[in-house]
Length: 226
Image 1 (spheres, rainbow, N blue to C red):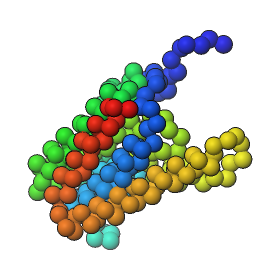
Image 2 (tube, rainbow, N blue to C red; image 1 turned 180 degrees about the vertical axis):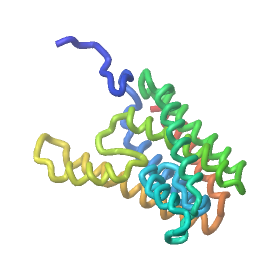
Image 3 (cartoon, rainbow, N blue to C red; image 1 turned 90 degrees about the vertical axis):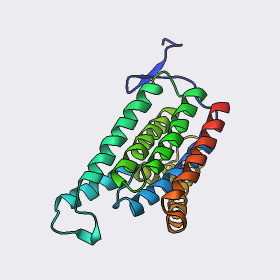
Image 4 (tube, helix red, strand yellow; image 1 turned 120 degrees about the vertical axis):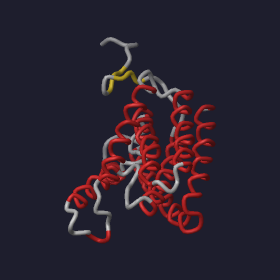
């Protein structure tokens, strides 16, 4: 068996990345939940990282005459978010194709801080604010994938729940209980972030994007030092 060759996943090389990425990923998950709540409340019920939710809402919005549950009847916000998220995934792919090193990880999270500031600068124009936020969320999702911590995703909550339960019930190997706790912690972080986002919107409206940008900047600093 040949050794020393890079493992390839999705045609990318996986190299050693950020040491112990769990704290960074959990913090990113919390901030993601925060921004997702802000976007959903303030930008016509559009998510910036929950693409499953956007897809369901897009299907509802296509039936424009029903106005189901008071949701926006226009599909364009969902289309813009999904497309922007895909652009962010592609950008993250290119940045991280040679590995999620501390420097590259910090670059991704630092870009998220700048993109949150760009969304704040475009406040009052929901469609323009959605674009940078969704691009950042897409790049962050690629970072979470490349860091490769089992059971942790900063946006894919459905898969996180599946992973939590499957790991909890698994009888194979050691450390399954710890991985299950990590997965559950990811769900708690996302839910908690969403709750904070709702509070932030009630108190600050779009000004709440500024502490989110600050949190990304701080996390970029820590990601680069690990």
